[in-house]
Amino acid sequence: KRKEINEQYKDQERVNKELTRYKMSLKQTYLTLDDLRQAELDIIRHCQQQKFQEEISALQRKEPVKKGSRICRLNPQLQEGILRVGGRLSRASMPIEAKHPMLLPKNHHVADLILREAHERLGHSGRNHILSHVRQRYWIIDAPSTIRKMLSRCTTCRRQHGAAGTQMMADLPRNRVVPDDPPFTRSGVDLFGPFNVKRGRSYVKRYGVIFTCLASRAVHIEMATSLETDSFIHALRRFIARRGQVKEMRSDNGTNFVGADRELRKAIKEWNTSQIENSLLQRDIKWIFNPPSGSHHGGVWERIIRSIRKIMVATLREQCLDEEGLQTFFCECEAILNSRPITTPSNDMNDLEALTPQHLMLLKSQPNLPPGLFHTDDNYARRRWRQVQYMSDLFWKRWTKEYLPLLQKRQKWNHPSRNFIPGDVVLVVDESAPRGSWLMGKIVKTMEDEHGMVRKVRVKTKTNELERPITKLCLLQEAA
Image 1: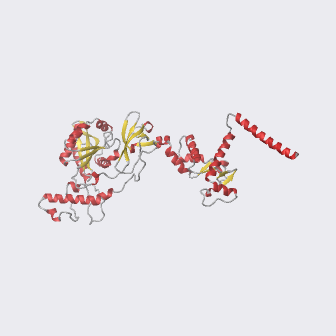
Image 2 (image 1 turned 30 degrees about the vertical axis):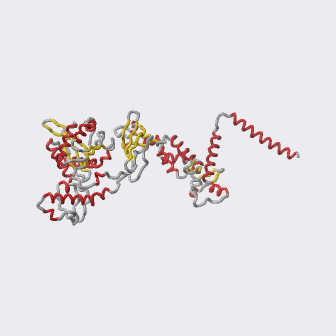
Image 3 (image 1 turned 90 degrees about the horizontal axis):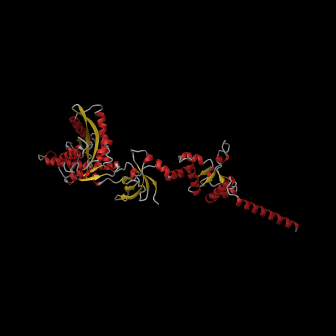
């Protein structure tokens, strides 16, 4: 009986101590380092019980972890109920926690919180810095990919390093792939320059106006004497008078003429576009603008302007031409560009020569293809129109069979991307300003193509509302 009393007394004493300790903990107004450490271990233990239950049970039974386990190669160990990396660094001169870090599963909320806290503590550092810091205490399964996803969602990192939006390259427009129209029926126009031209004892500036056929890739170059609206209209009228009627004219928006320097862009902004449009409407010409800052929409003429600059650098060097010489030089550049092959040349002497825009414009080639609707005798017929028709028909047959298949591949932007939607917070790219001063805005309207892909949007900033292509926007935060 005395023994039972002693045991009851000891039990009561133990209960009193526990109650006293609990009472004292209620009076404590701050957390100690031990409290935080114990709470951390409890959280880690709970996470491991959720994801590594089979491995923990095997180690408790003193059995090896299954070979198919995700952590088998880490040689896991169980220490005080915590699953740790066994590894091969037991003899290394490192802290014990770095040699045997605690294991955590991937795609777990706790692992994400640990990585996010390390990322912010390290001043939004990169992936390798975060990984080396976290592995001093934790070993998160597949941590590099988890960190990469976290960085891609970080608004601060997106603002500093985020890439502009992309979308799968669109199908070529109809005006690029439909044959049988006369050259320059559908054209693109751009300006380039200026060029210093000697006039008497002084120097004046002259500019180049380039027109390119969207289908045959033929080129026509005119000279503009100034940046006035009337000067551009005169160049346009000369082009139409020499090359024939144009149905559709495309150009970059006035804010982003590709060949233009700062002075030229400033003058183009001041153009009287209504005067130009009225002049075109009188001739039944439709003028289509690419979206502001969307220079890649005019890649057809951008590439040709680059070729012109290459010819100019190789030819002019330090020479200064007079006005007549510059006009002659433009004509020679035009001839060089129109003789460039638009199909792949063959190494076989028996094959046809590569197709060039000159085949359609000058009709001087000697084709050997089997005739279509016409006979070979027509090539030598007395009636000139039959010969011209034969040559033109032959060009378009070769154009369809040899040139169009070269446009089949997408050179970049091969896969669909997430569409921008109203409510997305974005950074508006401004290549003329430092990244830290780019405007932040919110998408208010999207413009889809016939395939449902967004390529242009309207963005509301703190000052105004802009229309921009998605390639000039960096996504900061997705709409809720």
